Amino acid sequence: MKLNKSLIAKTVAGVALVAGAALPAAAQTAPSFTINPAYLGGPATPVVANQMSGTSSELLHTNGNTHTGSGWLQIGSFSNAGTPVNGTGLLDNYRLYITFDLSDVYREGGKGINTQYSVNTLTKLDFKFYADTKMDNGYTQASVLNGGVEATVSNQDDDILLGTGSLIEGDASFGRLLGASLNSTQTFSLTDEGKLFFISPDPFYNLAFDAFNNTTQGFAVVGANGLVSINQAIGTIDFNRAPNEVPEPASLALMGLGMLGLAAGTRRRRAK
Figure 1: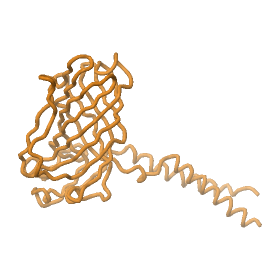
Figure 2: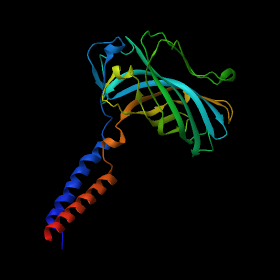
Figure 3: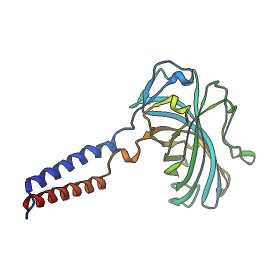
Figure 4: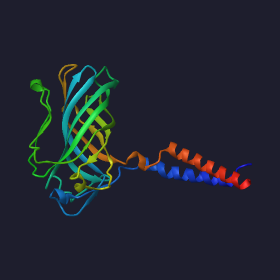
């Protein structure tokens, strides 16, 4: 018995419509989130943003074709669709910062690790996201001098841990002028305190470090297999929807086949 062509056409069209609606979502700008500045002593009105910007410092230790290192990232501003967001209280009533530990392995390009055009695959990037409500932290920049100085944060004892995260995937690289860049996506788990600041959505998004770059002036290396300091790296942090929020094209195709199978079965039953 032949399938009803009209039913098949409607089913395929419906699947295509769903796919067409889902695919653009992956190309949209970063999704919005809502913060509650009052929890950290800021203004009382919640604020909507979709991005944070900051600067970082880190010291890398080279061992063969791998790096290990740590550093910090200070959050300087919030924005929404490229427009600065006011009323957050950031830098006036509190500060936000991240500490991190990372490792990577040389993958391709250049003449090896720590050279122009080299690309490394991140194998670890664990971080902790803090609020400094007393605004009394000190930030030491990384340096390759005097045997190496780690990028550290002082006076952390009374800071509030808002969340933690770990690597999903990412790359780090060195450009023609040895400016360093890093892009990665991370898990992001809020603490109970973090949920009082990042109040929406619930559950919250994954986190992404987007295009953290520095200039040649912020880069220093001692020896081919030595210490690497990366300072003045500027970039943005935004958030990604969890993978299960938007059906993948393959899943949509399977759903379509299932719908066709259901239609065929219904047709056969009616024909009996």
